[in-house]
Length: 238
Image 1 (cartoon, one colour):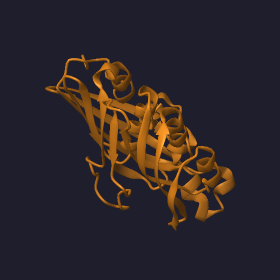
Image 2 (tube, rainbow, N blue to C red; image 1 turned 135 degrees about the vertical axis):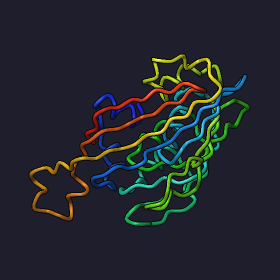
Image 3 (tube, rainbow, N blue to C red; image 1 turned 180 degrees about the vertical axis):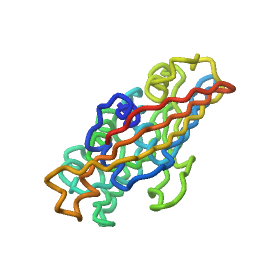
């Protein structure tokens, strides 16, 4: 389940919480998505937060082996996990308290799933070894803090035979409209954070408040399908 879906369903995990540590009170632009349907493919592009969502969809819906390149970044050491997965590490560095692993390797879909389950930021480009309609291109470095939303940070292609699985994940709440008969879909989000809920044990530890406080507010999701538009609003506690 992707993190936006988690928020709307009220089923948020720690990995989703980590995405919101950078936010205080206020209104903030959220991730953006574009979906285009062609005869044989579904093409998508999106901002930073969609890179892992697209990668997980490929791992879940495609069989075979993939050439994988990119970075995996984590606060924790992933040496043992990557070794267990037989991942070739080209380079390991430390940046802003993160362990940064540069990888270039060939993996099957099961290992690909495990990479995306790591407690880490996973920024990978994925190309099939055999000719199938699944691939992902992701920029090499995350956006700089305070920068604008890059709506072309990542792009992917899915085989059109998986349209139900892809749309059920990306457009889980678009039942009001016929999402199968479309040319182009655009989705945008806005976060409205009204309150920071600080756990009692951290109230006297100001250096840890940002990390452990939960953000309470609303998420606004706008879905535009060709000429139709729907607006979804949900409570947010992350």
